[in-house]
Length: 123
View 1 (cartoon, helix red, strand yellow):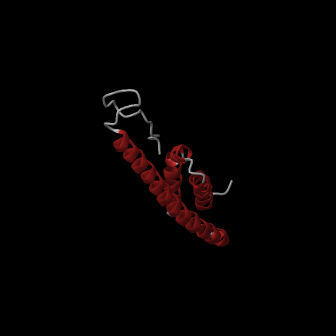
View 2: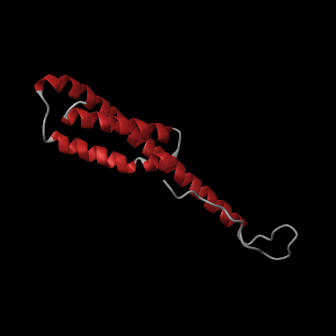
View 3: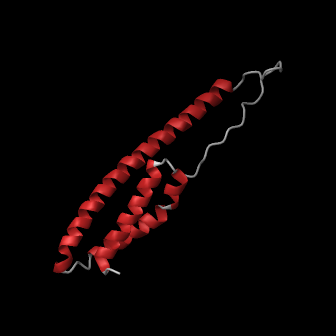
């Protein structure tokens, strides 16, 4: 196992790759389950930065730094996309609920409650 900063950078990159794959698939529950692990990996990386790195490992660290930058930018883009999709879904459900509110159900002479709908709240 690689020591200190290198190991922490690899762990953070792995978590970001996993989360990015979940977000690309719009698998929000899977992405949400990674939140604690991502925070822990980021915290471990930040703590390991204080310890520095051996000069012989600087090249590997530079490469990992570039990879983390790319993964982080992609993660941000995917999170923004996921939030936009989720907002559109909520808006669509809200419009449908408003459109059906107060309408009489077929075969009934008076208005009934809008049909039940479910929204996944785990994000």
